[in-house]
Image (cartoon, rainbow, N blue to C red; front, side, top):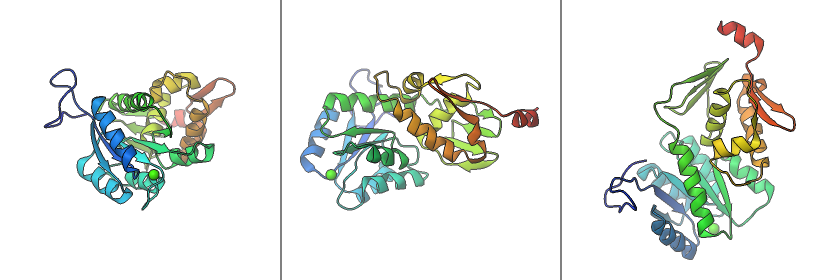
Length: 250
Ligand code: CA
């Protein structure tokens, strides 16, 4: 996070003020969000269209994008996918706002690369807590952290890059953190609750199915390393290095 010129810090003079880009076509709600997020110590910038949201995200590189799912021009899912494709915006966390709450929308939101999901109507307090949690876990990704190698998996936290057998695989922020957490703890089972707390930054009882959804997506992306990610039934997940990969590395 960076300190921003002209922004008033809430506590210490040097405290960074995270910029949140709000992409929401309901003008009353957008104005309400802008006001409340400013009061909560964020710098807020508003746009009412998906295309403008994409342009602004690349131009101002906010710390976070708060993205409405139902926009008049592009769908929020398309905006999110496009943010994930561009190198300039790939690592900006996205929190989706939606009036819908069924599982299919939630899953497609995560598939498009969203980091979290807030269903309307929501309380501003809950939203602020979610945004802070997302920012906490993304800023916790220390850029000086060394690469992690587990068998054919190689993670470079500084560049936010993942390689499987030398081939780059594009992961969302969340998938990257999940894989980093597991790869740094080879053979050690991690419960869903621990993963929610350590990877999502949430200590609240968000449905543990969220973890399952992400692990499935991540496993699909791992290709030749998909068997590394093991389900430990009734407990959680762990990353293992198959014997032949371990032998090859010796
Ligand atoms: Ca809308």
